[in-house]
Image (cartoon, rainbow, N blue to C red):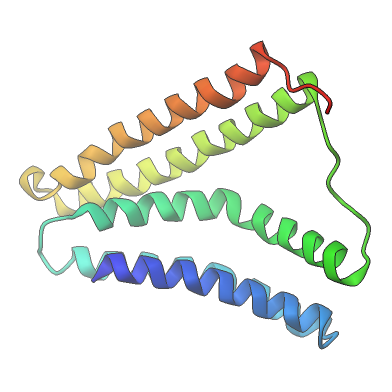
Length: 177
């Protein structure tokens, strides 16, 4: 059940984002748009509450509980930048705003990839804190095995990300096309 709630939260994120941008650019309601976009973190709060309630039922932690922690970590770190990117994209693509993206190459692009990876490390650190809090809250190792596995999963994702993006573009800089 929690897995489907996570999917609903992801859909809710994009629906609120689209509604906020629609209010801003189609209806020209700047304050309403800002209020809608400020509601986006409420999706995360709802997921946190749902996960806590589900864990307090006494059942064993499942894959979905760890996924919820990782989802919350990544939305906390990347959510604002996704909203900012989508706002700039819609302004440029549909409403003749200024183009915000600049093509970057060489070391500048490698630095960008390093920054994104470090933000991923922060997201995983937040997820690890949430996982640790859940493990501490449950206080029964036999019921938290699924949560323990997420530490290794995050480690491998960060390791692969490190090799194929920041390190790759540091050794083989992106060339201008």
